[in-house]
Length: 326
Image (tube, rainbow, N blue to C red; front, side, top):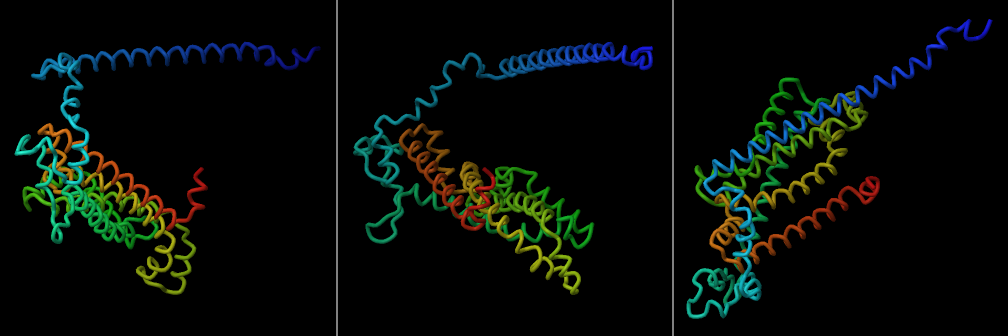
């Protein structure tokens, strides 16, 4: 008697492996077929949608496609020195004797502070934009911190309070800042106040979500110790939880400040004040030198804010926290 006779399953083992391989090949082929069919359907739907949109569009997208960069060419200044003059409100020879109209009236935007000392118009508008972002971030931080502790699963006083806090934050971040700014501009008139409210409300919802997720991951042993000595909920939050999460809170707040600088610029286009409104006007009127000056100033400001924010976050959290991520 052989081993195969005593173990008949050994004879079917190779056949079973072959069947498994065949089944696997069939399954892969079937998946590839389904994927190909899906891609073909998706491509057909995309082409049909584009053709429908092109036929519905009075400008006919495909016919105008060769002229895509015409708009960019309109914004290229004829004299690149005018970009520097527009940035610092210096007179331009292209605007001498009233020639060029508003396109070259750079000195008219000067904001005089004392005597002949003035702040260039675009720098003043950039300061307004930064102030909108800064005030909005501070307001959002102040209101997001208590809401986050109410919404955190491990520290919320009660389940209904937690649900209400989470729904409030979801509502605040459900609408883009530009929609809220448009609403408040209609109510409060055009200006920075509407922008501060819009960005601040969205910041509360966005920071609140980030904050309560940080709180839910803290070490609960200090909280257990505070409970053991009869500490109130406020004392547990203040002495057990807050010291653990505050560095991360500050890091997220600084990151949000960077985002709010960009958001404040966009909101300016709908009447929120700051540099965004002037940028919109310069682009719509085809003022190349002013447009380039505004874009360079905005680009430089965002770089400075990003670098300062990154440096400050490293100082608050510690260099080791960044080294562990690499």
